[in-house]
Image 1 (spheres, helix red, strand yellow):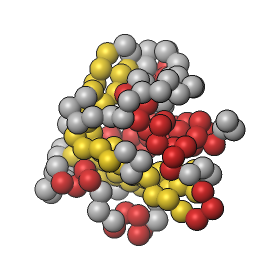
Image 2 (image 1 turned 120 degrees about the horizontal axis):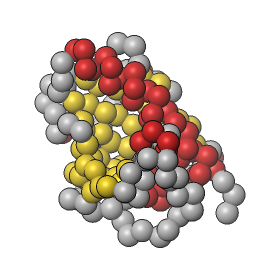
Image 3 (image 1 turned 60 degrees about the vertical axis):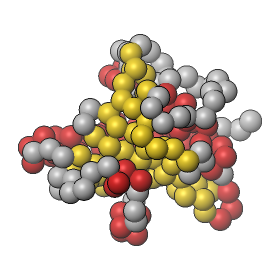
Image 4 (image 1 turned 135 degrees about the vertical axis):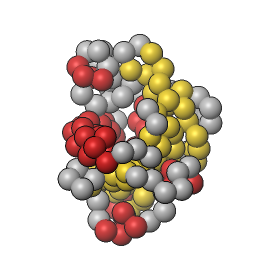
Length: 165
């Protein structure tokens, strides 16, 4: 399906993701990934801060409000908390979390996992998998729309985590 993958390898697509535990036979599966030139300890706080804003195209999914560009020192995410805030309203729920390793949530009938995979030389692979039960027409539209938005989000996290000090 067009838009079902961006920036991931076949191996990364084949691996198990925590979101897989929440949907037995998903009708839609999409994968996103980016190489971050920073260790997981620099990437994780930005993933955890998704609770404050979507970090994508703010003019679309955050009513023009800019996602924070500084870490605010949030406590670690907890199961049951809101997943994100967009346009001043909380959305979704965190379903599972292992600090520094993954954040798994649900939003808009989708289940998603952000997974941090440490590499050599303080490199992190930031992977995102989204799954859901849906019809084929919606799945195709979702995959393309998400490709645009998730790509921007992951690239924003990459840029923020790679910034000096």
